[in-house]
Length: 414
Image (cartoon, rainbow, N blue to C red):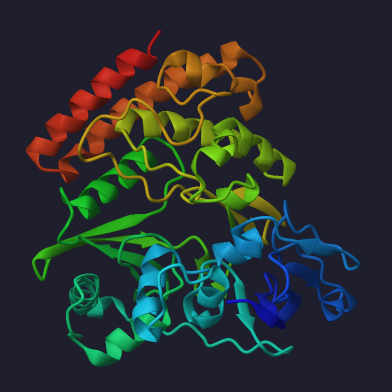
């Protein structure tokens, strides 16, 4: 699909929560690239938030051309459905494989997009408020998500319709948003028939293990045996009750297309991401936090640490971008990885102490010695964190992850 009509981009203001038109995206039919321009009304209202601090810095007289994603700007790609949402929209609208991303962006409902952006055909914002299922509906929600993933008829037709309408939440696994009694929003991911292990249980344990190690990991809750399938809830960092928070993926920050293949491998890099965090104004502790997550991923064996599994979130109370809490951290259930998906240092994906420390200064450490001290202290914290969270797994997985942890600690130890 190409589009000669503008797609207007809306933003929920970080300060008041009001929706405003932040700009317009245009994809002329005769070109392969799209353009974005901030709206004059946005500037005239005295507003100047950049929706993407790397690729779309605020400027009223600038037209920004998209170099990736079939001519779509990175932050709009962030707001697009990923594999799961695209599959739902293909079924709902009888779309072929290879449907352009712009088609998915326009068809997806604004009710539950990631971050604080929405799109529409009108110059004035028109955004449906999020009306997520409530926590007591979790068993039915899990059952319906499994029916959808297995191409079975709807268990509950009204719920099925709502889930299709909120297909914008990213990722490859079935998922949906649920609201708890306190008004907080959680992402629900159920176990599916093709899983080789209880993935929700593993994810819940890994997230709580990271938090117990003193790192900033998204809060989770585990639900075992719901309609025969387990599920994990992850607290959404892009929501604060009904306020949506601006977010950008690491893929956008690194200008690294995902999926991107070998052509983008040089940009898939923890040190590069640390430098982008500094560039957009995140404090030094965020870069050190990222270094700690890199170490944690190596120890637990999470090699699904790609550029869409890291993000930055705008915190209005601080008036700056911050590294988002860690999410989608799942130990590899089949084997112990020897590499990660992001470079640990320039040109190196292999797990070893030298790879961790070679580019330590790019994470904000004053010296290599300071980074080594941090690394050694974190190894102790991660080991203690495992001891306090291992009970969340059965004995088989406790033993497997303990062996993996011990082996990897030997590799990273002095």
